[in-house]
Amino acid sequence: SQLTTDSRNRSWLDKELRVQIAQARQTLERTIQTQAELGAARAAADERQRLRRELDEVKLNIRKRNTDNSVSKRLIERVDEDTWGLHMPTGTNIMPLPNVRPKSQRHIVGEEINCSVAVETGCFTWSIRGMSWLRHALLARDPDEPYAESRCFEVGNETFVLKYWPDWPRQTEVLSERPGSLYLVHSTGEGITFRYKISVKDKRGVFRQWGDEADVCTPWDDTKDEPFGPDVGREVKGVFGLTHDELLESEWVDCDTMTVRDR
Image (cartoon, rainbow, N blue to C red; front, side, top):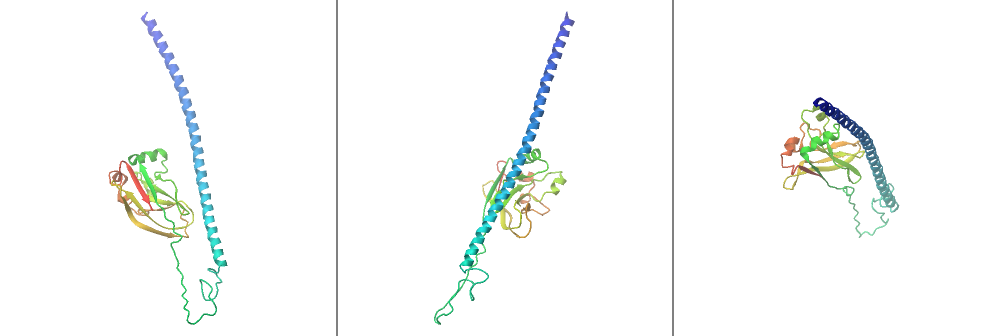
């Protein structure tokens, strides 16, 4: 009869639903297990990254020590040659002079000091693609680090990174920690003396300087993780004074990409 048929259909549907529920629970368990495995893999990857940075610091320290040792060896050679030192021959700081000179002979002694001989120069170009998606990507990656960061680059024995920290509307707590919009970070410990300027490429492909060339001389201060940039420490922040949304519509973002250069 019709009732018997309906009863059988409901029974079949109940069994089918129970099967689907069991399958869904198995899928959920596999998903949870995968999530746990991915979490452990992420923690392991973070640890490997930390160890690589620790190795970078050790290697950098080795390079700096080797440089200091090379300078010390050269100074020892100059002392042994009597061309430099605390106990130079009397009457000159360049070369020992004979005790007796003919009256008709002229002796001209001079020296040149080159203060730029130890200056290292470098240039680093960094592009951020998908600028209109940047806030979303940063929020999905880590809400506690609301900025984009370049890879480390070296100039001489010093290590830097570039950071771009967009403004976050209606998030005053995040903005209160924002040192600047686009800035350099000195990743090496101890002090530093350097000059830098930051330029941004416009839609014509021309790099135009943002702000003045900066001259930093803090050889005795601890400048590790110190930010340097045209708007660092200023109340109004933004590349060329623009908010992130204004920057997206400006000549400084081409095909959703901003390209900057530090030199």
